[in-house]
Image (tube, rainbow, N blue to C red; front, side):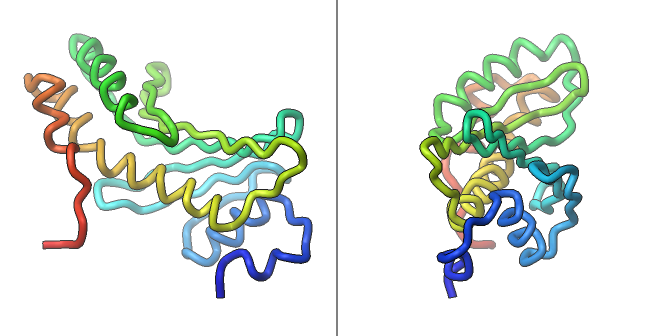
Length: 166
């Protein structure tokens, strides 16, 4: 059964769908408010904090996926250069660095203007894309901020997506 089959005749709030997906995947989550949910999703490199919030005013489902990163101040220019290079490769979503809380952030907004409804498959794809992007670029970000490797060299580790396991 497709994720969306049970929602075909119902008008369901997008955060209710996210909660169902989190339960299905056995992810830890907290329904912060009627229109916001936070969860922890385990990746290969680390556990990612993912928050989704529904904004009725502009009909957008906003998602942020974060992980901690504490780059040395002298490596911030390399990180910012790397963020530009990484974002040139991302078609859905973008990375930024929030210096005060020391968080790497992947952001995406699904615009549902005109009363459109997000399908469970769309939401699941949003979450999956965030985790896959974070997993793909995490090693490159580490090389950028904790070694003397150039951004170009650091990105070589993230050029191709890995398929399967060795």
